[in-house]
Length: 377
Image (tube, rainbow, N blue to C red; front, side, top):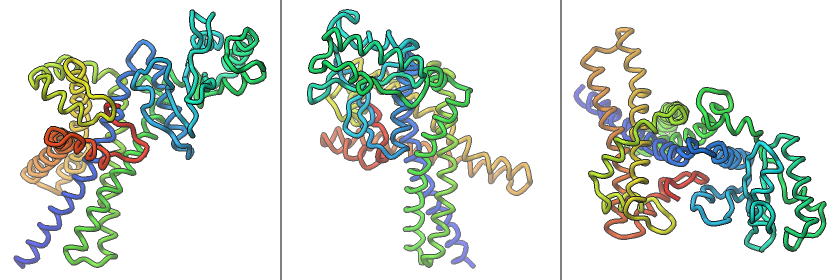
């Protein structure tokens, strides 16, 4: 009897370890998204939303998308790159203004945006027919005026100007909370995150089941159950996190998280921030702001994960299936697991970078799902 009880306890512990691994991977991807999407609150937030939404749409439809390309703020650099083509996104309500913004001297000079081959970048405008048609007509005028170097045929305007995957209104909606376009965008991101969490937890659960002597059939069943549970949790957390961010929750935490970053100090913040950067290192105030943004996302995601994971336990106590003592114990385990997972992927990468520069980036690479943006690119 003792052996059976010990075996049951061990199985619960290993299952929880598998769940924690998947939840950590899901949280990592969701915090990535929240970091990038804080830009949605800017004056031109719908433009950033359009870039993210178009990237996501192209990725889901099998195109090769280079994520986070516009985050380096390079002068006259591309906002997106799809299948090797550089794209400058101009989500204006007026097609004429969108094209004028692509030329120097307030629209009177030459085209600002050229690709690695010194050819015109693709200019992406909203998919509204009226906006697109005006944009093409304006580009034709620019070509005839000799403002597009290397291009003299006005018919080329329709090749340079391309429709985005979303209308101007949809882009504005995506940057806000509580509408269908916004929910669809967050749900698509959530599905990608859920797939990542499912994979991580299922692999861990399958391996531990085999090591404990279960048959492959039983191990596969355990892996599927664990993966579905964690994937579902990650999906809900990702969608709720996206909606709360757009509703302004992250903005409400700016002062508190910047105060925490100030307590950590610029050196510690630089270690944390640069652990997740693939570009040039940042220091001082920039590193502190980046760390504060990371903290905001981490707090929201960790809190929501605890709430979602505890929902079933709350339902069980209402139905009389578990005692208040068991509920408290389960909640304690969930809190410890979520806190440990959150601290693990942040602290692990930061410590790796501190001990040996480059190791933190390797941890980041191992945790990242293919196609997902890096937190601080």
